[in-house]
Length: 299
Image 1 (spheres, rainbow, N blue to C red):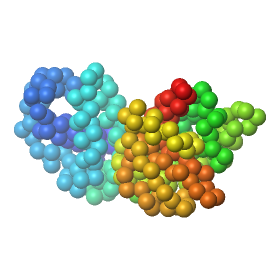
Image 2: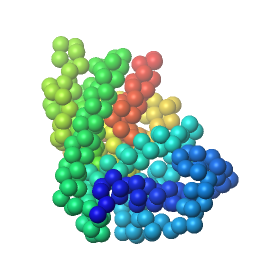
Image 3: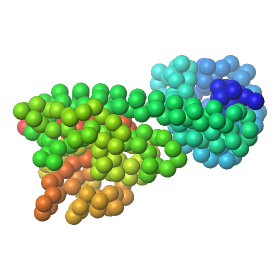
């Protein structure tokens, strides 16, 4: 039987390379440059061209991981990409596949590894992804609390910084990292009651899951008090925004059918206005928020 790492090296890695090579347009990049970025020889590129993806990855498995492989293929054409950076991204993707149970299902179907050992590794990788997300949210908070005048934009209901973690096969059940008790202003200081953890933000977590269902590149969400000039800031910063009128927090989630950078909820009777700001991760979301506040504070 193949050990788990051999499945990556002998099956998935050649399959990923074959997919990238077969989709390659030489008008965008030469074959030799493609080989360099993949970290293989031009001869190897020819070999992948002559092979079928199905020799390495079954149709059933490809259906589950195709979007991620396409993301890796797009990465190939980014300036400055090195084989080391690409391998790092492939490893991150591999960890995500294991933590979501995709690889274990493949193993169970093809009997290429001990299924129980894969389940143990799934749990281990899931814990790794959660811990990494917690560190990221902490980093986002450090940026957040240093934004000039940030205290003026935190609403009475407080705010939060959240990060979705892709674990399991149901996006509606992906864990969300957030600060329990939210981010608050106490004695003129930005504070949290505890470190970020799974389930630290129920409502914002629900909004984030819905946005991720619409746009699978969204993993982070934060927010500030509603301000009518945020629309002006969004236009100036070339950020997309959408206004939603809702009578409850649940209605906001139900009404979401787009994934803009900013969702504006004016609030209403008994409800404080709020602006949700999304990003590729929690740090990205907070950096967008910072740009907005810097623009608003510029007058």
